[in-house]
Structure formats: C-alpha cells, structure tokens
Length: 449
Picture 1 (cartoon, rainbow, N blue to C red):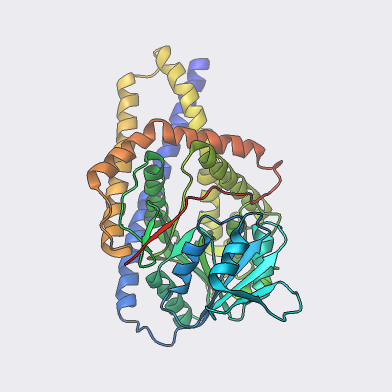
Picture 2: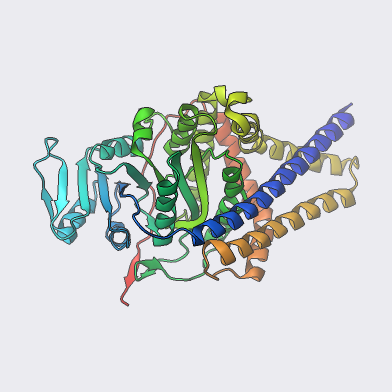
C-alpha cells in the first residue's frame, strides 16, 4: 500500500513538472515572437513629441546611494519629466544629503512638506513621516504634475532607451494602462556616464539571481504580455496612467507586494481586450539584489506571501471567462505553479529518496529524468542569453560557459533553498502582517568620464 502511494505521488510529480516545463517552453516561444514584433515596430516609430512623465521614487534610509541613483534620473535625455523623491521618514542622512547636494528650498505648498531644488528645476523632494512604501507612493502621487507616473525604487538605475520605449507606447496606444520592461541585475558598484559599467557578477549569489531575472523577464513575462495576460509589472520600473491609480484608490498599504497587488486590481478594474498592460523587450532599469542568504530568504518569503495574499484577495479572477486568457489560463497558472510548486517540490524530495532506498524506483530512471530537466533548463538559459544580447540589452556581458555552469550549480542547493523558503512563506501567508522594512544597500561609485 505504501509503495503504491509513493509511486503514485512520484508519477503525479513527474507529470506536473513535465507540464510546467512544457508551458515554460511555450512562453519562451511566444516571448521570441514578442521581441521580433517589438523590434520591427520600434524601428519605425520616431522619437518625437513624447508625453511628459513624473518619476516617483520612495526612499527609506538610502544615504549610501541616493545621490548617485538620483543623478541617473536627472541625466535622462527626456526633457518633459519631473523626479519626485519621497523621503519616507528616513532616520539616516538621506534628507541631509539631498538638501546639501541639490540645494533644496521649502515651497509654499499647504502641506509644508514639499521641497524644490534650486539647481535642478525637475527635482522635488517630499518629506514624510515613515508610513511604508505603499503609503509613501500614495503621498508622493499628490505632488505629481503629469498624467503619466513611473514608480521606481531608490536602488534602481533607469535606462534612457527603456524610458523612451514606454513613452512611445503610451503615445501611440491610448488604451495602454501600465507598462514595464526587462529589469537587469546591477552586477557591480561602479557607474560611468550615469550608466552601470559592463561587468560580470563576481559573487555566485548575485550570478544566480542574474540568471533568474533573465529567465523570468526575457523567457517568461514577455510571453505573458504578448498573449494579454500581464499580471505583474515590477515596482522597480512601472509606468502607468495616474488616473488609473486613482480609480482603484491607489497603492494598498495592506499588501505585502504592492506592485503585484496594484496590477491585479487594475486588471479587474480595466477588464476586457480594450485595455492593455504590457511588458516590453527592452531594459528599463538595473537594480540591486540581495547579497546574503539571510536577505535573500526575507525577499523570497515576502514575494511568496504577497503572491498568495494577492491571488486570494482577487479570487474572482480565477477561471472567470470575462477576463479571457488572463482568467482562464494565467491566474490558474500562478495558483498551480507559482503558488503551490513548493509543495510539489517538497513531496518529490521527500518521497524519492524513500522510494530509492526501498528499491521501488530504478535509480537510472531517476537520474535520466533529472538530467532531462537540467538539459531543458540549460537550453532555456542559452536561448535567453542570445535574446538578451541580440535584442534586449545589446550588451555582451554574458559568458555562455559561465552561465551554463551557474545554471547547473543552482540546481544543487540554491533552487532547493528557494523552494524551502517559499514553502515556509506559503504556510505563513495568511498570518503575516505586511511590511516594507529596510533593505540592505551597496554603495555606488560614480567614475569620472
């Protein structure tokens, strides 16, 4: 009886992972079509009369990098822009640095919290009590002048081409509600001409995350976007209409992942094929990632809890035909794969050694199945690298041999740790209070030209 149960669980897990990889392969194919289609249209779209945009950047204890990252925003070639920094009650030198470096002067705004830079007319700083990222964004939104808002994190470096691509999209498509692009990992600490230097990550943990970001954005999210099923545009770079944010009451302070929650609620408010949410195959920004396992575990557990929380609170989307492919395919996929895959991984790793020990499973078959999965993942990585180098970032910073080694190594410990963190988060998802918290930052260094 026990043998039959174990074999049944293993067969079910095998079919589950085969199905997941099959869907992933289809998304990769669709992503390639998206990239090809985008590049053809982008070449024929002139860079003229682009709409104005307000960059909204919440900052909490960002003294190690706020001046360097802010300089990259100010150096963007787009003229019709404003940058609004919301100092969310920082207790370090963030506000002091901004006052000294940009000569801030308090305005006559009724709130008494708005500062204007004397040296940079496009820069405003809002000083607020600490209230968390979602509320900081909502508060900063009150001071924006333009109809388009681009939310970004204080540790992200925007790219002019990414900003331009999103602005072009809003110009030509009046039904576009929100847009983003490919987010790349900031591998080093050095900036030159307000852009990251072309360096390869030196730390294995950063390298593993770089592979993850490549596969997530280039090989998966572009595919979801092409079939009209975008449910997440990262808050590290999300350009959207201000009226849309106001329509749903702004960012939710009760959400652990305010960016995911925002897009899902917008999809509910703007249902149907008349409104569009897009992820474009262009690098929009570079962002810092955790460099220790402790910080990485906190990030991944927060992401998983936020995923469960958002899906649960918006359960009406599940298999709802009125929402088309989004409701019938994308949302079920996020439930079955993104939310509950840690359970399937846990079952597999629990039952397989037990079955091998008692001789119920042929070791050769187990090794063959694992090898096939690894080869498939190596193929995904190679294709993703080629798509990124040729079409997305146009920066040859990938080493094929090193990336193949990294993809192989992350299957021996790193992926298992991620599954374990997500499993713990799954069990805690309905009892954890949401928080933004303070994230560790790495100081940035700006080289002289």
